[in-house]
Length: 397
Image (cartoon, rainbow, N blue to C red):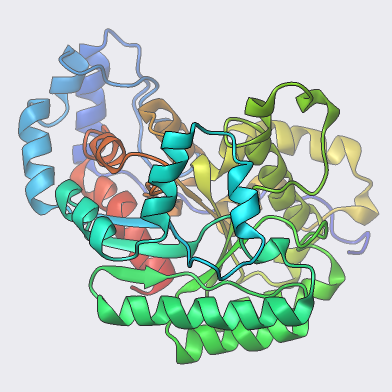
């Protein structure tokens, strides 16, 4: 990164909203007494500012009654969920002990583990009951990140990826899969990535945050990014149940450490390391996918952009402002965040083509997640992108 590349405020071209979309937002705005802002769905354009309350005038003004709209969506809309966990009993020897330390009631954990260890029977029943056409399966946390020995990580990665490929092959219209990688050995990870995609047909990689305290912006992982870019597959950066370190501010409040806050903070920071470390300047065709509404980074874009030139000397800056990479190299999924206000904000920030539907099965309710999706206040074409189109394009489904 030389001093000849100052920050450039580059904004990707926005797709103009359709007239029908504008009319629907105008109608919703009028019905809500002007509380909503009229606009389109491409990045950087205004969007509906508040959630439509069931039964309200705003909820019924967009394209007819809400019940009618939902009935039409339920009949026609394909749904692909992209962060859906599974596990293999005994595959990771540290897993059983770590599971016992998870912060949840015993009843909740039993149900999670029962569903994680099942790939077909309970899962397909749940999908059918809730209208989910396809799940993109990924190995749960704890995953390979807890393995110390690189050779053991390589062996486990091959076992998990082979198992996953067989599960997908047995139900090719219902499942796709994200590979695991033994990033403890970056050279072996490149070999396994190539095998998983080219031979096994897996659609990308999901990795649980840190590599035993190391992060993916570090130089040793550059060959992995080069192969991800060459193969045209995304890396889904997911939280790890075992943190790289402990933050004192969390002491005494276990609820802060996990999904309610700590995971978002650490994975979001990891993604920013990729941006600030120049990964996407060196590999502009590479992408990372972030769950939980992009680990909230879409809502922080203005702050990131305004502080970057004030804090980083010219000679150390990347080629663009942070928001550029969030709109061009990052995808966000809805996993675990069933809020229309958050969805509208994320779409407004990064664009409707960069937001994908996810449930976070079995940790979240499929019924609630699908209900949230079907009732989202979007025109059918835009809702279809979020529900399945973006996943099909990104993952080559």
